[in-house]
Length: 68
Image 1: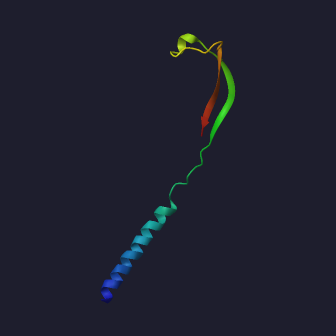
Image 2: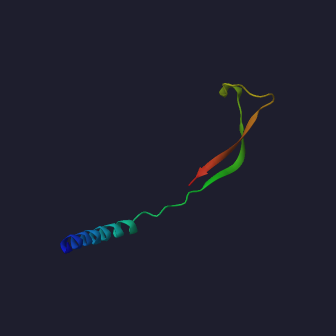
Image 3: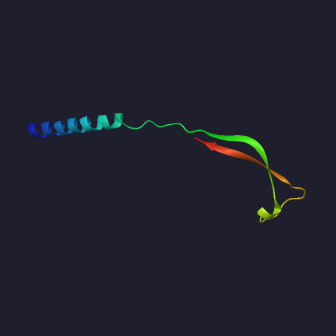
């Protein structure tokens, strides 16, 4: 009975020994940010839009999506 417990204890110590360095070397999670850029007006053409333009629509207001 003593031999069974000592071998289980040794297996436990070996498994702890090999898992601790792996978890300590894990990569650090970076935070990511998402930001909307400044508003810009761009020229609009009816030919480029298959659904057509609204009455009096000559420009579009767009914003860039910046992801880090």
